[in-house]
Amino acid sequence: MIEWRAALRTTRLEVDISVIICTYNRAESLRRTLQTCCDLVITAGVTWELLVVDNNSTDATKQVCNEFTGKLPLRYLFESRQGKSFALNQGVVVATGDLLSFTDDDVDLAPNYLDELWQAAIKYPAVSVFGGKILPRWENPPPRWMSDNAKLLLSGVTVHFDRGDVEHVLADGKSVFYGANMAIRKIIFEKGFRYREDLGLDGSRRIGAEDVEFMRAILTAGYKALYMPKAIVHHRNSRKRMAERYVREWFIGYGMSEVRCGAVNRSHCWFGAPRHAWKTVVLNGAKYLATRWTCPSRVWLPAEIKMATTWGEITEMRRQAILKNRENTKL
Figure 1 (cartoon, rainbow, N blue to C red):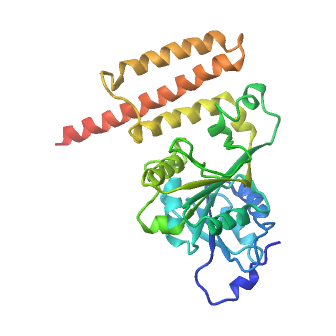
Figure 2: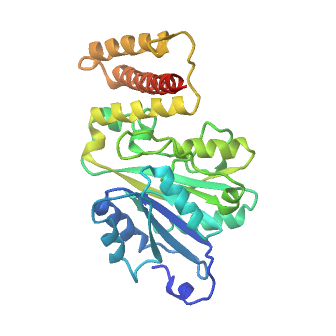
Figure 3: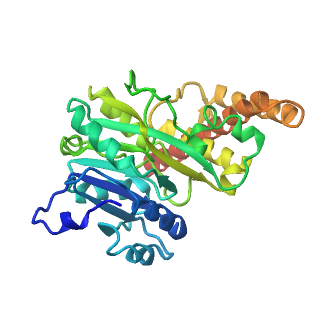
């Protein structure tokens, strides 16, 4: 087990690594994650802190954090503004580590997880972002259509990130780490980078992409990112995630985030959204209905994903159009 108590006896206010976990109404899941943090092993003399940012939870989140007093170098923070990016940015401001490691409240950390990231940060001073594997851990046996597509089509839904067993620098901004396993040097944040607060889960809609958009901004600015295959976390996939309804909701949120990031063409609009978008929803919806129960998932699942993603794009474009009309009316 990691010897962090000696670090707390020093007079240093700063630590080497800050681990940041944002959470919202997942007290029991958080407890499991914190328990795996107790088993972390790291090189002697390396100091760390664990920041749990409670994003306005109404359950027993704070009590769970209190259970780990004396077991972990844990600091409990409360962020009342609903939205994961608000919580992430508060953690960034409070963190004192040279390396900020981000993970989630529904993962199990491998014992060597933190040490792998730290050793990479020491070995590669020219690299600013580090990340590793995220492997699914099924709480119940998944349906065949999900397990067959977990690594590719449904990698975002199952939070499955695996780029092989060879350490390498990411070549472009299209291949980015997921927020459940990503570490960033604090100097990046000192240069003004922050998570976009119009992205990220907010307790109502499943609009994510705050981690992807943030990392794309870093890579676009010229910073390097290194994939570390031995830095592993396991993402727990509950029964809820294995339902088609959850998949559709996830991709609707993804479509909405794409609009907010300016990645969608808005030409030739009809009822607030491009005509081709309406056509895409209808055609893919028809294909899904015609093949769902008669064809393998490689046929109907892409259609369902495209239908849901495009519907999310339409929903967000119409929302923005309504808001704009309201503003123009006030003027």
